[in-house]
Image (cartoon, rainbow, N blue to C red; front, side, top):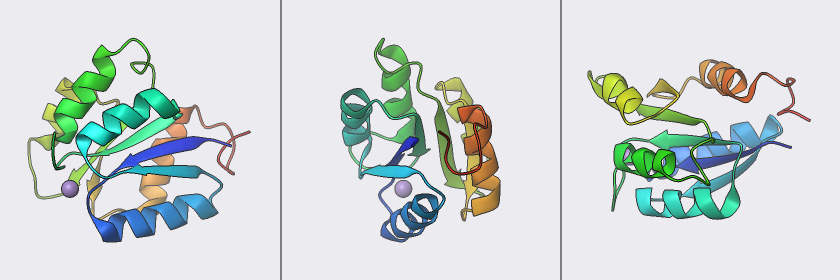
Length: 128
Ligand code: MN
C-alpha cells in the first residue's frame, strides 16, 4: 500500500483528501505545518508528499527545498498545492524542487491522475 504524506493546515482539505485517498487505497499521514512536514518526511519515508504551499512555521516552498536538499528525502516526489488564483505559485513551486503542481479547490480525479503519474501509475488501487 502506498503511503502519502499530506502537509496541510486547512481542516476541511485534510478531512476530504484523507478520506478520499484513504478510500482509494492509500495510507495518508498528515502534517499540519511545514516544519512537521520535513520531520515526518524523514521519519516516515512516504512514497509521495502532497504539499500545501501556504503553511505555518515554514511555508511549502521552504519545506520542499529542505526535503530536496536532504539525502534521505530528496527521492520522494513532491506534489505542490495552492489556490487557483495565486499566479506565479506554480513556477515558484517547480523552482523550489516540487515535481508537479495542482490547484485548489481540489479536484480529486485530476489530483489522483497526478499522484498516479508520480508514483509510476502502479495500478488503480493505490499500488501494490
Ligand atoms: Mn494552507
